[in-house]
Image 1 (cartoon, rainbow, N blue to C red):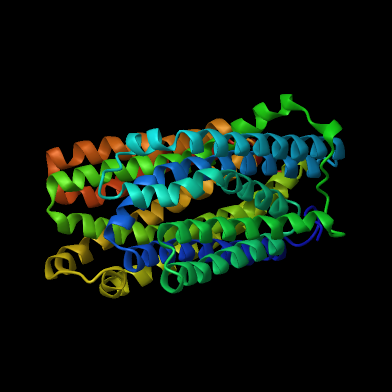
Image 2 (cartoon, helix red, strand yellow):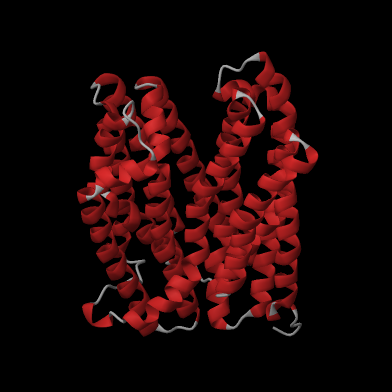
Length: 441
C-alpha cells in the first residue's frame, strides 16, 4: 500500500479493522483472565492480582513509552523518505527497551518482598502474590518489549501482522489460563505463566515481520544513536502516563466510593470498570488506525491528506460512540448481570449510574482521538496536557470535591465533567494546529 497516494478511506479501513480486532481481543482477554482467577482460584487470589495491577501498569506503560514514541517518529521518517533516520529510531528504541526490560526483570525480582510490602499485600494473600509475582518479575521484560515490537510492526504498514500477534497471544493466554488453572491446578503461577507465554507469542509473531519482504525495519548496531531517545520519550510520554495514571485514579475512586457508599457502590464501579475496558478499546482503535497515516503524511508534508484522514477517523469514532452508548443504554440491565450476581440494590442503583457515567463517551471520544492525533503530529506537549487533565488532575479533583457539595451520587457524573472540561482544551489545541489553517496543502 502507498500511504502517500492510495485513497484515504481505503487506507484507513485497512488499518482500522485489524487494529479494532486486536484491541477488542486484548480487552476480552483481560476480562476473561480476571474472571478465571476469581472463580478458579478464589477471592484472595483476585485481591492479590488487584494489588499487583499498579506494577502491571508500570511495565506496559514503559512499553508504550518506547513503542508509541518510536513508531510515530518512524512513520514521520518514512514520509520524509529518510532511511537512515528510520534505522536510528528503530535500532535505538529497541536496544534501549531491551536494556530497560532486563533491568526491570532483575532488580524487582531480587526486591520483590519489599514491593509486596509497599503494595499493601497482607498475610491472607501473600502466598498468592509470591506465586504470581516471582514469575511476573523474572519475565517482566517481555511485557515491556511486546508493545514496542507490535507498535513498530503496525507502523511499518503491517497492521494485519500486528493484529495476528495480538489475537494469537490473547487467545493462547485464555486457553492456557483454563488449562493451567482448572485442569492442572497450578494456581496463580499458572495464571501468570499463561500471561507471559501469550505475550511472548504475540511478540514473536510481530518479530517475524522482520524476515518478510514487506519489512522496512532494520536493526544495525552502528545505527544506535542515544541522542534520538529524547524525542522518542517525549512523544511516548502521554501513552505511558495514560497507562500508569489509570491505576492511581482507580485507587482514588475506590476510596471515595468506600467513603460515600456501602459495598454495593464498589460492585457498581467494578461493573463500570469492566465495561470501560471494552469502550476504551474501541475508541483507541479508531485513533490508532489514523496515527500511522497522519504521521507518514506529516513527514511527506501533505497537509490535505492529513485533514482527510483526520476527518474520516473522527466520523468513524463518532459512529462507534453512538453505537456503543446505544447498546449500553438499551442493555444496561444485561450488562449489570453479566459481570456479577447483583443484589437488588446494585440493580436499582447501578442501572442509572452506568447510564450517567457513560454519557462521558461523547466527550471522551474527542479527547482520546485528539491525544493520539497530537502524538501523530509530534506535538507531545499537547498530547501530554490532554492526558494529564483527563487521566489524572481533573479526575482526582472532581472525585474528591463533587461529593462534598452535591452528594454521593455526583461521583457517577465525575467523568462527564472531566471529559467536558478536557474537551475544551483539546478543541483549542486542534484549532491552533497549522494543518487545519492551510487551504492549499
